[in-house]
Image 1 (cartoon, rainbow, N blue to C red):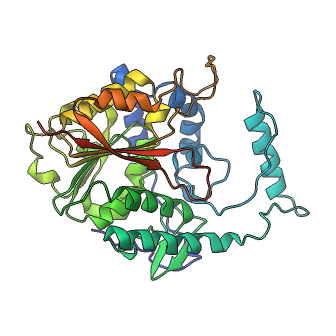
Image 2 (image 1 turned 120 degrees about the vertical axis):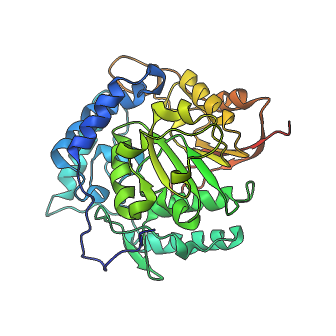
Image 3 (image 1 turned 30 degrees about the horizontal axis):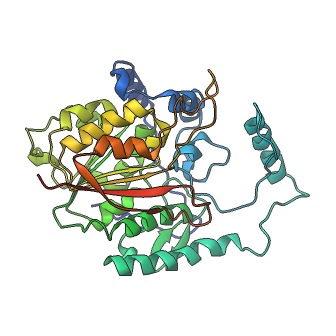
Length: 373
């Protein structure tokens, strides 16, 4: 496995390579995918700004961008800072606040700050809190640092590794979920969404012999593909190779064992008979539609995982009454969708508020265990 620790200290810029031909191929493949595996209204709305940004700005320094659509799926590691907010929400409010914050942060006369908080002290503070969680969970946090790829803004070097606040949030989620589902050396992992890749890489470092099947929709999958390929080298089977692989019944093909596969969402049915140990989904089911979530969970349950982990807003990431052109989900995905979809095959082993550090406790974690046959 490629060493994911930073190659040099602060000030060194390590970039993720662009591959616009691959991005174009992904998007063309997506056009031919069944509707059940294409972006629903929530992400279809974001794609209008997502694709132009990737094409014109590429992935250079993507982990430090401000006012970027990449922030919407956890790809940015910025330093905590104050921001202007409007008291009332209305159409166009997002554009106004982005402009005001852009103006304030470039002004030579004004500076936004959070009183009594040193932004550079936040990440070390959470590092030690999460390190204690890892000790209780039986893991060593120092074995899974992030790296400097993508030129992240919030990078603190601690105990020889690189850390950011947002990366530590995902490490914290992993440690908190550890108690209900013990992990073993032969662990295999399916996730419905690969997301930014940078935040998920910690699992792969802790479980070096594990196989990871990462499913997502382009163009999010493109960002994860490029980042993980740069981070883990030959351990990653990238999209252009992974789409041509097919499992053999319930067994993993020999050439993928111990690897990280970058797969598009529409390939999930082909892998739906492969036996896995854990299905993991974080903060993406809430962005789909109920029927799409039920379909994904049905396929996931067919893979006979011992454990299913879901992190989500209990009432869904719903923006109010849906209207054309405004994004958001058409129907809220509530926790009842998960409970009903898994009823009869999985029992709820644990549920608790997800620890998002300084964010309001608006997410819950659900851990389901397979029922004995």
